[in-house]
Image (cartoon, rainbow, N blue to C red; front, side):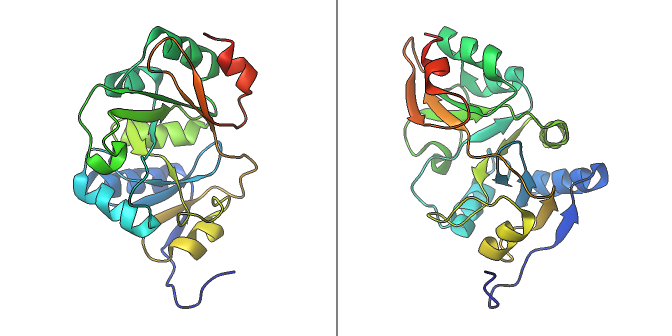
Length: 208
């Protein structure tokens, strides 16, 4: 149920013109909500410390790492070190609902990695989302668009209800039927499943 005390952010249809506008906001430090192939994400430039700090304040999530969505496996490889096991997982499951936690290749704000030296990356299986990522430079934070501890938003209205006027723009791609991605750690030869999801644990583990 919408909290009447929270003013909602602007909602626009998820369309190419709105994607260009959203990307422009991200490039200037803005915060957006956008649909993915799983749930709605809360996006900003992952290299922008002020934007990431704003994201954690809006989400009320100060102490958990933030995953990053990437426009391609190549973009992911620019951000993290894809060990051979991670490369095999990516080749089989990207684009798709598998987040792979890898060692960082490039420095990112502390809020993103929380001092772990690793970050979760994923390439989503939604063409217009890929277009958005490309226009944003190849990467967007991919944490779910909800207040920490509450269910992930599967519609623009659910995101607006929880986040109020925190984001600058919410892109409405309809109600999403997916669930959160599977999350695995693959920094070396072994695969550790951190969160079960659409990609079966047996499939992921079998890649080692």
